[in-house]
Amino acid sequence: MYGDGSAPFHGVFSLKIRGVFTAEQLQQALAKLQAGHCLLNMVIEEDSKGVPWFVLSKRPAPIPVRIEERQGDEHWMQETRREWATLFQVNTHPLLRLVWLRGAEVSDLLLVVHHCAFDGGAVLCMVHELLSLLDAPQKKVAAATALPFTHVQDLVPHNIYYSRGNRAKRLLLGGVAQLAAVAVPVIKRLQRQPEVTGRKDYFITWTIDKDATSALTRRCVTQKITPHAALTTAFLYAFRQVKGAAARNRILCPVDIRRYVREIKKDTLFAFGMGVNLSVSKKSDAGFWQAAQQVQAALTRQTDKLNGYDFLMNFECFHPMLARRAKGKTKEMVNYDMVFSNLGRLDIPKSFTSFEVEAVYPPTVMGPTGNYNTVLTSTFRGQMDFSFTGSTHHFAYEEAVRVKEIAMELLLGQP
Image (cartoon, rainbow, N blue to C red; front, side):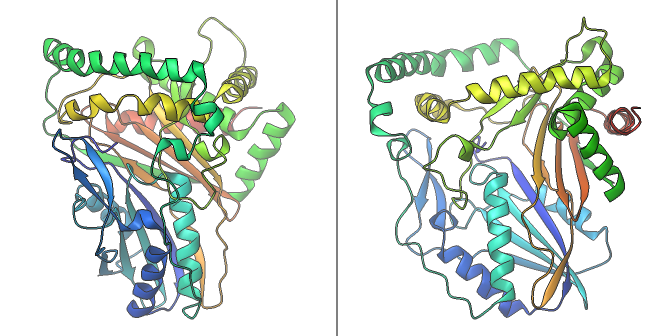
């Protein structure tokens, strides 16, 4: 997710707040947040081989804040696009920054993160803490005095990490990684993937109101499936209708590693790419909800088999490839139609002493290269919000709109 550091891979999480606070209060809240998490004091440095590392800064810079006067309810969209294109100063500054769209009674706060450092769970943790600190300036926070972990061995139990089978697997994967570090760049040169030029990123947002969200939830309970399975099925069907035979019939769904590695706590700032791949049977003539039940079965089967410790140990073996990572300017080929990330019902209080969280805008994330069709959804104040991000070099804006329309018609128009 860091690549070679030359291209953004940013997530933006935005809130609409009704209430009044000062710049000083915001800076104080951010300072306390930063003091409580070592990762917010990290910078990225590359070693002599070009491999990037998180390094704890001895004199960390404060979390940057940019203040603009709020221009209306859609101003956050304009600023989101601006933040997508703005690189982090990874060598000198935190991998989190904030944009405050300031209004007399209503403000928007945009938390911008580098995805190599923070996943959705980490962002939600920071949002919750920041709002609590902003609401209670007198609240004291214990400063983090030590990193929660420094090596993968700190996250994997000793008996698992040093078992004979896992040691043999790491030795094998390390050899594979050494070969891949040499072979992959050669293969990419032979494939001669075209460079991406004139790329234009976009996103669309929409909301399912409270009544429709409630009705969807009830229908999923009746069908004995989760909303995640129903949504995934709807998007798979939509891509098939829009792309026809060119559809990959596969959606990548990230999974929160905290569910599988108990050493990574709910309030631990972390990012790690772990997920499942979901498809629908092309041969089946089952109706929508029957297909959704099949997707649910596949989702349950795959998540039950996930092993967070294995993922961490296996990926740690591929460090030799990091020094030969791509420059991020070629059109990468991938084998899925989109990434679908469901943050679920947000654990963010609606009301505080001095302000109210009136809305959580649909989160967005934009990566540097390849197919970056990504749908993020979350539920706040009883309604489900969506964002669809994409890039014109891979997927036309009109196609994204059509996928959204078909998916929602399938999902909400089913008898």
